[in-house]
Image 1 (tube, rainbow, N blue to C red):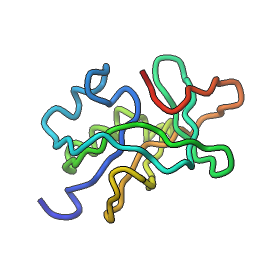
Image 2 (image 1 turned 135 degrees about the vertical axis):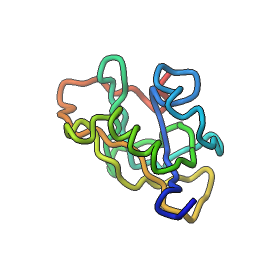
Image 3 (image 1 turned 90 degrees about the vertical axis):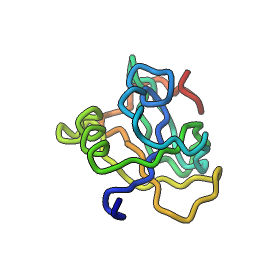
Length: 123
């Protein structure tokens, strides 16, 4: 795999193992459970969560760290509605595991004004 086709992704909701979209990562490499820095808030968007950056009131979010290939990245972009601007992929800072490589996550792009805060773990 080239560096371009080998990405680290942090998933925190329906893409986690055992959840409804977890099967999209079945043939990828699960690395570990993970914990973000306390710079994020997760909202309940109904049947899925939405993560946003909030460095003032943020909390550490529980999720999973995966190494994925370029084909999976394209699929996840489709699943997460990147072209429709539902989510955008961006860098996320993890505190566990400590890792020097860039890690990406999907950040919710919609309004969170009327959405309830989930907490730190989508269950």
